[in-house]
Length: 103
Image (cartoon, helix red, strand yellow):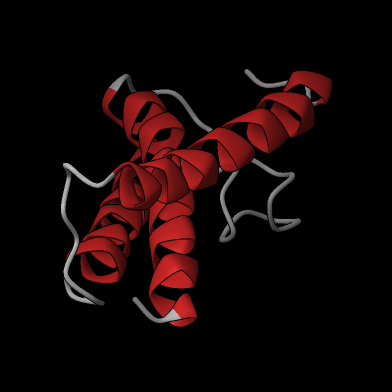
């Protein structure tokens, strides 16, 4: 498989991992930082914006994982690449938002 497919799977995992905190905070009615807050990524966005942002992340991850290459959930290298993307964005988010004071 071409190298760029694994890059797409990695970023697909990152977008999938980014989906979770925005969706959970949005449907819970809590404000949470997003790229649309002021300042971007540091201010708080409304729950509605976070739900929309999370769903966009989900759509992007779907296209990167399932429409680039031929994703096979039984292939450890492919699943692992998605998993590394999820792991990296999750750890970076925990560090970043752990320092921020959220409501």
